[in-house]
Figure 1 (tube, one colour):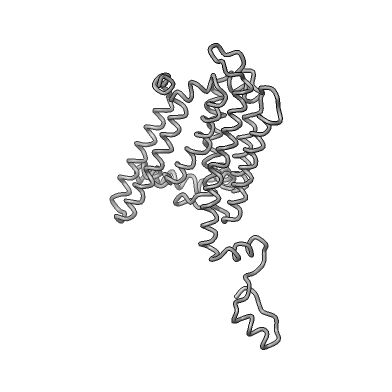
Figure 2 (cartoon, one colour):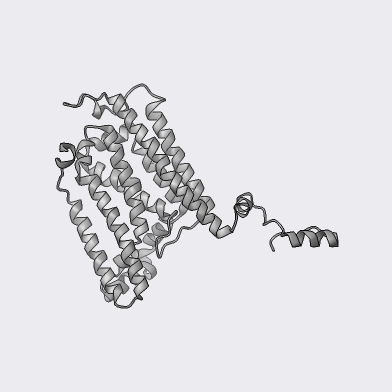
Length: 309
């Protein structure tokens, strides 16, 4: 129990989380005055997911997980998975965007909206927004963050510099995680830019990235990559064994999130296309197969059956 009960820390991030939750609740209260009861209930359900995501971030940075991540590499991998996958998924499902926007009073809210959408000085921000909402950018940025921060020189530098560790490493995991999952999960008023076929490919590509990284840290090497985990006082687990456990966690968790995500995406594709054959036709670029009536009619007239009806 000492591993769980001790080493909770105070972090300024707590203030940010509390402020964000308060702003979200304020936005919900303002929306409640001119919304239907069903929409109010839906926003409240979504808020539970959003708050769970913020709580997940707190667990990752202020709980004993953060403390023990300095001594054990495999705990560090658990922390990275919470920040990159668990928290962003819950935040995106929670769809906090409209309530957070309505946290501002109507006057400032309209002024901010006019500035970002109409003011020429905000053109760079609008361009940046279009870039970050691009599905390919989200996919590449998410996988790049995962790979680059596990390069030994980058990882070791972040271990020596707390600012780099917190704001660059963890910050990039959170931001790219949210951008990636916005391309997979509808998050009102934002919708994924691509359909289920692209989403399934993105999930599989990310799973392959995690698997290759895990294999590289375990099977394809015989030494520890990270000197910061060598010769830590009180730690009897060898650095290489520690690294292998961390790689196993990364490998297993890659399948743990990818398989359910693929199941949801396949179900969504079947709902949109109507059948598995229609999904296959969409993948291969073929039109839908003719119906039985069209097939018989084509044989009676001698003309080939047409596609696309």
